[in-house]
Amino acid sequence: MLGKVRKIRSRDGREFDCYLVAPEAEDPTPAVAIASAIHGVDADIRWIADDLAAQGFIVAAPDLFWRSIPGPLPRDDHRAVRRSQPRPELIKLGEDDMADTLTYLCTLPNFNGRAAAMGFCYGGPYAILGPKRLGYAAGICCHGSQMLDYVQELDRIREPVCIVWGDQDSRAPADVLEAYRAIPSRMENVEVHIFPGVLHGYMMRGSKAFHPATHSFSMKRAMEILQGLRL
Image (cartoon, rainbow, N blue to C red; front, side, top):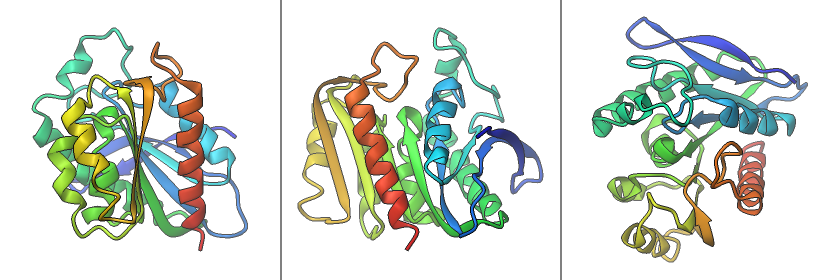
């Protein structure tokens, strides 16, 4: 199954790229919108998208950096750091892009109207913001960064949210992990998994931090959550 780059019209009338993999299906199927790390929609993100699509789900990975430095960047490219500055403003613009991506998904004939927001590293907060106020039916976060800024956004979310880290994640120090560990005890729709010895970037096959077992766990939970959106 081959993904294709599609153009999505933003609310200001311009267009941005989105990697789309839409399996042929007789029955309407859920979708997942991937919010990438600062390296953009690179080979690792496309690999994850293809894997999810192979299980029968529609997958869209928008370029959240199209306004400044569009396209994927190599891991050693210093311009990737610029993509995270100033972070709050970029995250807000990305909310518009994720909402516009969901609007685009609704035009696809085999979409059942229910989508998850799946965020990695920089894109992690969208796993919370997506179901909080962008119309997504679930959120999945893998080694998200700056997540302490968004912990309060979990309040009043009723949709399923799954958050996964390693306890050696450089972008999730002890105070972040402790803040999130406490949440499932008061919110049964939120699950938090923290794996020992796992580093930041464990989902990315092209990273030295890639951790196959934790990657497999995260993909399994993502697919289970997406399967639940079929109902």
